[in-house]
Length: 234
Image (cartoon, rainbow, N blue to C red; front, top):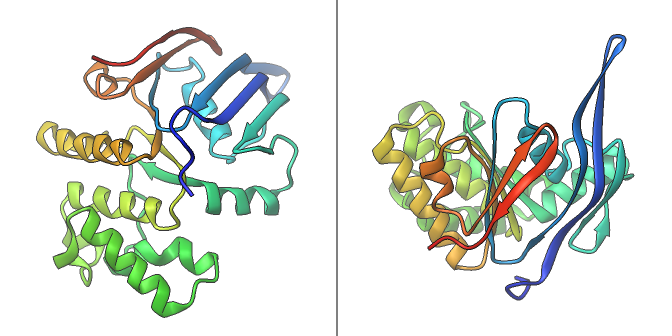
């Protein structure tokens, strides 16, 4: 069920992340406290090494904070084990990567179905859902093609459809147009804007101001801390 716009989906409280590199400690996040609300579209920005990718990994339950609390849709996930985190990822989060991360041996439909397979959906139900998602991203006539037979923009649309398959409330996007030309990038961003208008919360890492302008909010990071937050886009 889609939460009402403005409801708190994510809360971070004094979150740190420290990596041990030999004898050296690298503090990737130095104490992040913030919230992300339902129906918002966030761009996380910052220079290389600012902590933006680490933050996205934590939000995606791909890593754990060294300290602090992470509450995701009412679940305190900071200290969950790997199996529990995997379940949270499948049910609550959709991922869109720069490199698409499609399985080349599978068709478009099979790639979209993949999260539903891990959620034990019945084959006929998952196929029907994947077909609807393919139509939603404009690929109804490509469902039997494999990734190598698609353009970069079409591959990213498959990745978006896969991210939507289990109907998560939050989409996490890591430089989602990084491998695309400017025209295709604009098309993908317009698709994300349309999904946000339909109620999906989107949190996107980007280093490009032109892409960040599509977001309703922009969070700027520096040295593992939030430098500033800008409000709704005009």
